[in-house]
Image 1 (cartoon, rainbow, N blue to C red):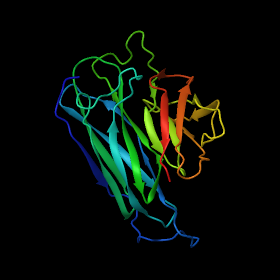
Image 2 (cartoon, rainbow, N blue to C red; image 1 turned 180 degrees about the horizontal axis):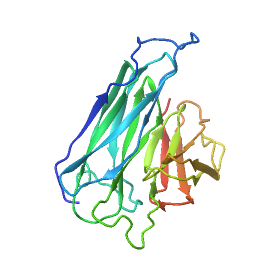
Image 3 (cartoon, helix red, strand yellow; image 1 turned 120 degrees about the horizontal axis):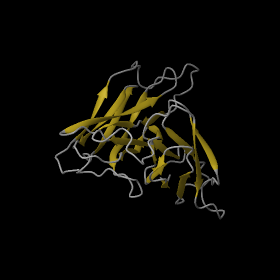
Length: 265
């Protein structure tokens, strides 16, 4: 794609009931931290100018509770193993910032400007990644931005047009929430399966429970396969988890490996 001037911003959509900060659940127990997840976006880039991709960042709380805290977001290029990785500056606008909840359950949005052009090309992918949580728990760290092409036939000859599949190349996780996810470029209409394994399964000091061959199910209406790791390391131990997704039941694999680094506690 050609170089262009792009920008990124975060916006807030006020939805959901606001209740006093420090509220408790209906049982009288103190509220647990809200969980936060960023969603995926897939849309055409357009033939010129810019197209806005709006990534929803949603929170989940127990009844009667609210979200109080913050996360950082940042854009991340697609990995080199992807068939056509999205690159900041030419494909989309790089950006970062902080999203904050102050006693509400509203969805926030990270808006990224994507550059349009008239050149036929494959589906590209970049990411919006969440980290640095304060007062909340990140359960869905990666949001895939699938830039689909509107300059060539819907399914070019010789292409597997059953959707692309990719994972963010690197990431962080936390003791209470350590997920890795593989994302399809479109919501699936039928049940799909993706296998996953860790690539370092030997030794007693790994600091996590390894996975040798786990089958993940992606139900109709969804677009991501998620595996969650159990951390066994004591506080302060350095833990790195090399993960590989493989053998999807359908779709075109892109980058299928990621390395998670545990944030020390």
